[in-house]
Image (cartoon, rainbow, N blue to C red; front, side):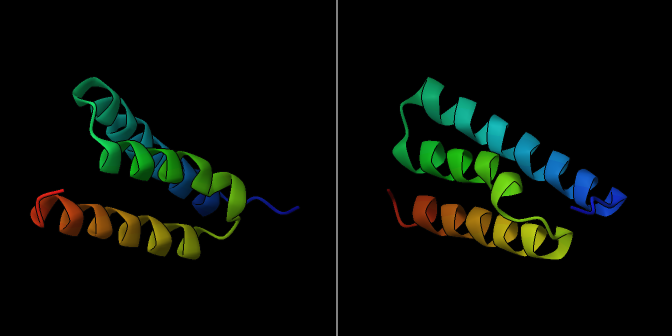
Length: 72
């Protein structure tokens, strides 16, 4: 298993955003934020490539934005 600096930094950033979104969702009792936060927290364990981690993380946040914008 080869871990590069970019993988560590991307994993840290994605999981930090996920932790923040998860805590917000827990405090406000909002299901979309809870699910997205949990996904972002687990993403660095599943994906080992910094590029894919960033792409899937950005897509998850964009999906959350669309979900909240739609009124969920």
